[in-house]
Structures are given as C-alpha cells and as structure tokens.
Length: 139
Image (cartoon, rainbow, N blue to C red; front, side, top):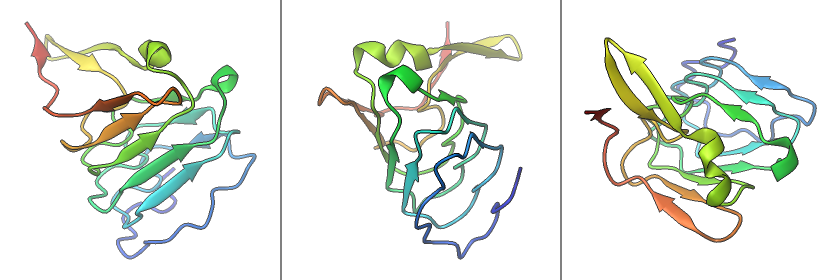
C-alpha cells in the first residue's frame, strides 16, 4: 500500500497507468509531487494516499460522472494548497460530503478534509469551492 510513501525526492510522476483501480493508503504520502492525474479506471483513493505533500498544486480526475471514484475524507490531508479539478458539478458534490465521528465529536467530511487552507475544488460546471477555514466539530 505504501509503494512510494516517504520518497521525499519523488517530484515527477509522468502518469498513473490506465487500469489502476485503487490508490492505496499512504501510496504517495510525503512525496514532492506538484501535479497528479487520476486515471478514469481508479475507483478508490484511500486515506492519506496524497497526504503530507506541501508541494502538491494540482490534481486532475479523468473519470466521468458515471464512474466517480470513492475518495476517503483525508486522502489529501496536510497537502497543498491544491486545486482539485473534478468531473462532477457542484450539485453532485454531495456524494463526497457527510460526517464522521471521533471521540464523540462529529466532524464534517468531504474530500477537502485536512487539505491546507487555500485549496480549491474546480467543478466541471465552472463553479469553484474554496477551502478558507479548518474543518471543525459540529456542535
């Protein structure tokens, strides 16, 4: 699962291969990548897959709306600020939003969780959602 984790000098990734199904937990954690293109074959991006990358500036999803991947809530934790270019619309974003509970605190959950302030989600309909504050417990 941690195939390239902690490869601090890994700064260039030409392409992830089409046919790749899962990007596993910690797969690229703490690498020095600036851009990542997610192939349309990917069905899951797991916890910390692209975590702890202060260099990460852009992630593009090549899937289409009928084949959206499942993205764990902290896949991009401590990374960015990053622009996530996604094939879904702002209205469809609720597929990636929900809540989770830790130590009796309920938190908002979406693919932004833990990504650095200044990150933004660029939807296929041209709408932009900016991460301007940290995720805090619901009260």
